[in-house]
Image (cartoon, rainbow, N blue to C red):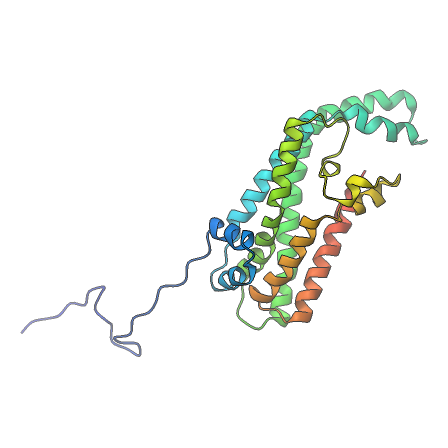
Length: 253
């Protein structure tokens, strides 16, 4: 009498005895995510991200590019040319203190600019994802997790990759004077129109084809990765856009 010992290849007894269970789908790699956006195939990409969400690679890539651009800018910007006109125009600032303020800002800018970039990336990744996750639980048409919401937040930001690479090249190769980083990109309305009000100028700098592309992709991600109904996907996209623009306008100085 022999005793059969089941191996890993032997089907086990039970409801699915003899049925091969397919492996779970692999999440799209960062290269596949970039290819899907580059070749204008976002819908299949976001459907794949519904089956297997991925977000960390896109987040780290965009964070590294943003950190490189802001660090270079903080090292090369002429702080005096950037701050002196506004300080001299501000009646509440003591003229005797202007040089001291500029000196302190010049010393702190290379340190605090990268820190602010990291904090901003964290806020603009995890908070919108929390909103999207809540919308998915209320209005979604399938099973989703917070990882799906992170994918729907992070992957559309890859549309900003050409802009971030261009900013790095501009900051590294050109004399930027006292220009702020978001003033240097030549495809925003704020590059051509310069209102005196800093908040209005910050708003115009958001009129940018790459920012608009991010919001279009966000809508598609909400529809196909989080499986939101169209009205909920539009609501989530508009809320995210409004909050992001408001954040940048409030931060403008």
